[in-house]
Length: 379
Image 1: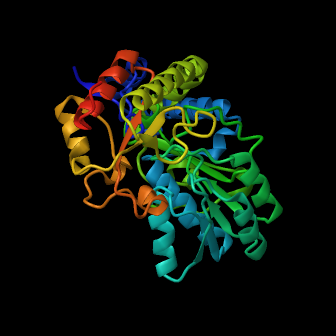
Image 2: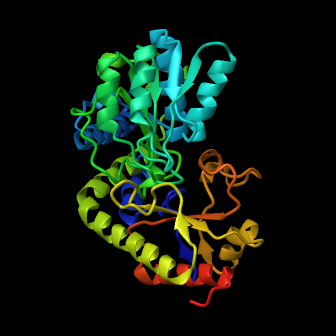
Image 3: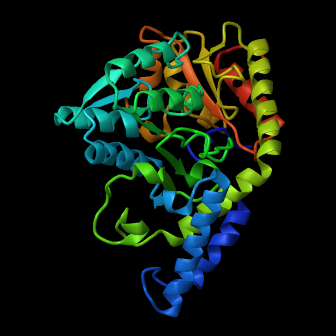
């Protein structure tokens, strides 16, 4: 029995999404930029997908720009907002996804911006008082803080941060890759100027995503070479990816309450069983706090052991797919920059388990037993 508990890295494709995509793989193959009937049909499908996403997020269709995923969208918003508005300061945190942290650090090395790092509390939450102090000292900055951390699951009070940014005329970008499709986003009520999404995080296809750019805070294009995406992103659109993205988000909103309840129960089950099975186990960040973290993510902190370096490898041998940090760096030799920031002296092991609507209680039990066996604890 193989158990997949790495859904924060990517989720399995929903069969309903695949069915929506199939005609655009096999039959409706026209280039959406072509003016003949084949092209017009595909163009209409793209615009219908854009409209559906806008309806779900309560924004206008013109504010949705399709991209290859969250990393491109984060890069585009950060780089182009700095260029478009002449921003000289970026306020961010040391536990952002590399798509944000590496981008702002690269821009700083080029002399384009200064970076102000906001303090974090002992659980890894943004110190909102320090954020306000930074905004007072650096008004009209770019604030880039993720809605929920992909490794430890901590959730940011995005509404409160948006209100702060409005008070200090700051441009507010939030990496929402882990929350779009899992939480309701009413963009008419949040003072955020740019958010990002990737379809494969909510049972859509890989290689498709979008960025929301508020219409009164438009930015320059990031990718040139064509008039696609309303002159905002050159290049032929990933048609079936876009169709799948819209369908996946539609399903996510349609079934969100049921899926949230189901996944929360799985996470709570794992927390209780781990505490009962492995003495000394704890949890990184606030990931075991269902009120302050993603219901899809649980980052387990294991007691010190010489076996911890091999824990993911050994879990894989036992048929358990999990992660030790960000999937985008899973092939790298260095450890998690998030855990390194929060726990610089820790010698304890870390495993990130992340759940989806397709996981079952018995899979949680199998994973707990496997982890207990590897920790040499009788389950």
